[in-house]
Figure 1 (tube, rainbow, N blue to C red):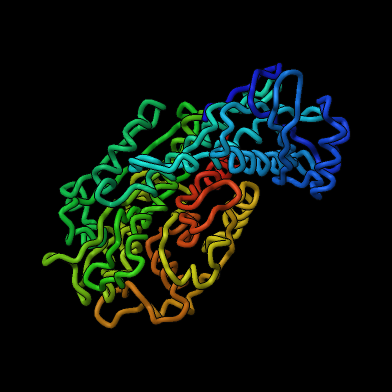
Figure 2 (figure 1 turned 180 degrees about the vertical axis):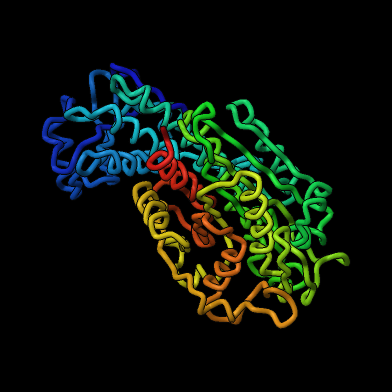
Length: 481
C-alpha cells in the first residue's frame, strides 16, 4: 500500500472522512444528512478506531464512504484510527482511498494516521502461492488530504520501516533465518550510515566467549555476534547508549529439549535481536542525532551429538564460570557474553538488553506487558515512560540480593537456572552479575510481546515489532542532541 499526501482530494473509489467524537454534523458531501443519520442509527459516535461504512451517490459516481472516528483528535487517537482504517479496507475490494479530516488536522496528526495505517497494513506473503480472492489485499493507495505533513511523515515512515524490518526477521522460519543469514539481512543498514561489525566463531573463541559458544555448539549453523553503530552526533557524543538483543534463531531447548507441541513458535526466540536491528534501522532512517550501538548475540540451540549437556561448566568472557543445569535456559548464556563484550568494547554508561528470556514472564504478565528489571530507578522510569508513550508497555519487577542464593552453584560461580519459582527474577539476577560497576543497566524480558495469536491495535496476527518504537522514543527523549 502506497501512502501519499495531497492538498486536494484525488479520484478514489473510497472516501474516508476522519471525524472527531461527536463532530460529524458538517460532512463535505451532498448526502451528509443521510450519512449522519445512518451513523447515529448505528451508534457511531466518533470514538478513536471505530467506523461507519455506507455507499452514496456523489455526482455520477457511487462512492464508498467510511466515517472514521479519531476520538479527541490527537496523534495517538489518529494512529489508532489509521490502523483501524487499514484493517477495515485492506481486503475489502477498495483499491484507492482518500482521507479527509472533517474540520482539519495538524501535519503531526495526519502523519500519525498514516503511521497507524502503515503499521497495521504490514503482512508477510513471501511463502504464499495461492490465496482466496477475498484474502488478497486490494488497497493499493491511501491518499491523505493535507498540506505540510511531509516532514512529520518522513520520520514516522522511517520508524515504520524499522518495525516492518523487525516483523520480517521475527516471521521468517529458522531454515531461512539463522545466525549467518540474520547478519546478511542487516547488511543493508550500511547504506543508511550504520557501521556493521561481525564476530565469527573464531573471533569469539579468541575472546573467550565460552558461554555463548556453548549454546551454539550443537548446531551446524555457526554463531555470530553482530554490532551496528549509528552516530548521528558526528563524533560529539563520547559514549553511546547500547542495546543488546538475544538472537536465538531457533530454540529446541537443546538436550533439555522442549515438548514438540508449540515448538514451531521458537523461531521467534530471536525477537530481542530483531527489535534491536529494527530500532537501528529506524534511528538511522530518520537520522537521529544520537550515538547508539545495537548488538545481537546470534545462535541456534540444537540437540546433536556435540550439543552442550546438562551439568557442563562453561567459562564466560568475563571469566566467571557457569554450571549449565538446563540447556533450555540458553538466552542468558548468550546475553552474558554479549553484555561483557559490549561493555568492554564501547564503555557505555547505559546498556539495555531485550530478550524473549523466560516463559515465567508470560505466566506473570501474559501478553499485555513486558517485564523490566533495572539497577537504576531513573533508567527504569525513562524506559517505562517511553514504552507507555508508544504502546510498548513495561511493568517493573524487583532485583534483590535475596534471590542470588537461588543461582549460586556448589561447583562453579553460578548456575544458569534457579528453582521453579521467580524464574524471570533469577534470570535477571544472573545477567546482573555481568554488569560492570557504574554501568546503568536495564533488562527487558519481552517473551510475551513479540508474537501475537490475535490481531492488536497496530498489528495483525504474528510478529508485532515490539521494542522498536520503545527504543526509538527512549533515544529521542534522552539522547538526541
